[in-house]
Image 1 (cartoon, helix red, strand yellow):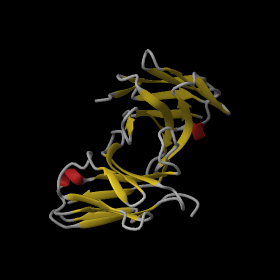
Image 2: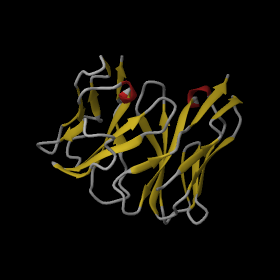
Image 3: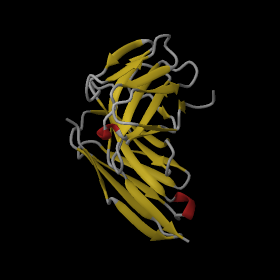
Image 4: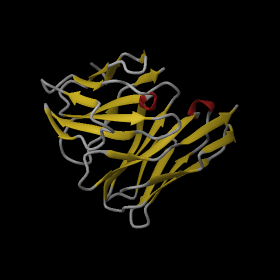
Length: 115
Length: 112
């Protein structure tokens, strides 16, 4: 596609429910990133994939958060047993190369509200 | 850990004014600095990317400067328009890291 696509755009989950957020990166982009943006804050890094390999998951806030990219294209961020503090916008970004200094392109995000 | 700060947090100006947004970062070991625009309910749109070896980048009415040694960047917007109203975020890609470190943004309102 022309850009990074994320679905759903909005998700309301009851506390304790599991959720799965999807990211379709720009076709051919090697690198994929997930960020979490709380209200009024800048995005914070969660995890990074190079093709199907998850090279950095240092930003995942707890073991309830899990991300995968099994075929090196679409990625899913899963949150188990959601809690209110998980409410945020989850942003996905992709970039064409693996090297540093490559511009990243962001999707519109999924707004998760845990009630 | 890299800390990125943006000042002011919010700014309101009349249409036509020139304005400057400020960004500072604590660790000067960066590959690049990027300015983004974020509209309500939308993702991030990249405006300008400055490599660490560069001093500035220009795109239309936008000019971004980078002083790596002092840990500062500015985004200059000339002849502001109501359509420029958005939140502007700066982010640095730090040496040895796989991700961007973002500031908390400046919310800009341009009044017609």
